[in-house]
Image (cartoon, rainbow, N blue to C red; front, side):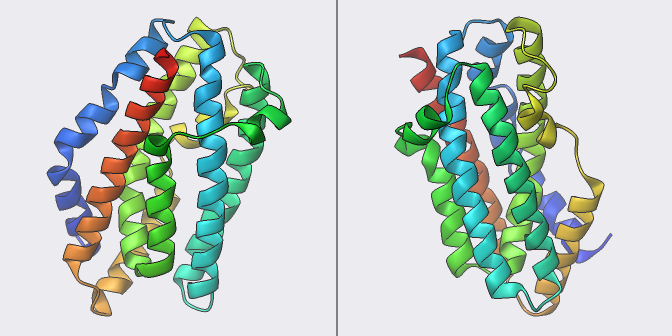
Length: 222
């Protein structure tokens, strides 16, 4: 086991309680039971529109910072992934009755937007290893929730596979992404990046992930 793999596994163990709260979130439970009003699904679409757009710009900044290093390709792939997600999100928004104009005009909530705000901070201030370490931990939890949401939206709300493509893009773990992220973390550790900073980035990003679900759930009940 490499240093990066050992560190990421330790971070995941440290965050087991937070990840359990994310995986068992009441928003997902309500969605699975069909208890979220269909028009309130627009909350998720609107918040994600702001998040994905922000994250795409944050990853582009990381490409600018690290484009001439091995991690540049890693961040370029993340930009392209967010671009695909943004396009798929428009399809989901349309499926829940939200036009492109309404999507862009949606007013986001502070709690849900803490996540991309921290990603933007990472893009400006953190090392590539901190960012890669945080995301390799975070995307597993996000992906599992996307898979659960996709199932609920199809079974309870009658959406098609195409209409939930946004969720499906994240639902299946990517071994290639994890390997690439581990390579970035390993290189960073070798160059002297402190493991405590990678731990901190993972802990905070996962905490903001939980805050996103809390905020969306609260806004969907109003």
